[in-house]
Amino acid sequence: MCQQREEHVMIPDSISEGLKILFIGYNPSLRSGEVGHNYAGPGNRFWKLLRDAGLTDRLVSPTEDRDLIRIGYGFTNIVARPTRRADEITKEEYAEGRLLLAEKLRRYRPRVACFVGKGVYEQYSGRKKIGWGVQPEPTVEGVIDFVAPSSSGLVTIPYEEIARIYRGLMSVVDGNGECSG
Image 1 (cartoon, one colour):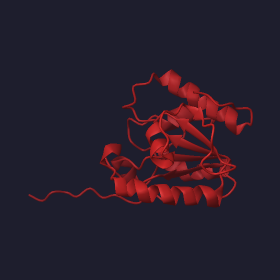
Image 2: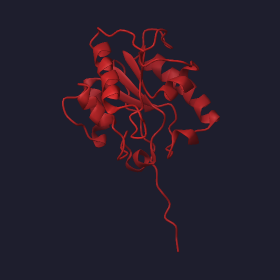
Image 3: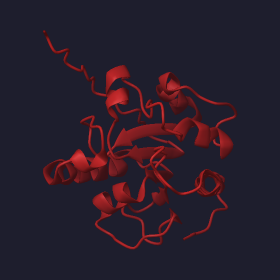
């Protein structure tokens, strides 16, 4: 009996100059790798969070991820390789990803770099004991670092609390956000 091999595609960055928000994830899920779109896993709440936080006016489908560049939202990951879980990412992949991400932030200079998960920001910045929301010291001058909870369905923080933090992202984009923790 032949075993069927899972096919994964590289999800291209959706990034350009002048973005309001660059969403930065750990890496694509296996499902996202299969379909070629961000946050496509059935248990991922990313698109629902964007709607509920007022960042989109309707529930967007993962297949529309690259269309959001028109309203100033872009996407990238610290590591490009799809995995089942973030703990499958190697130290070497994070080291390479840190350098590539810093280069992207310096080159494209989004208004806000939104790290979708504390662990993503910790891996990128090397900082520990960070709070949610705007970080007091940017890693790239002129780019606001914002840390939001992962949108994975495995996260145990109550959904309404996660949505509240994402609503804080909206106030930062509108220009009246403060540091929160």
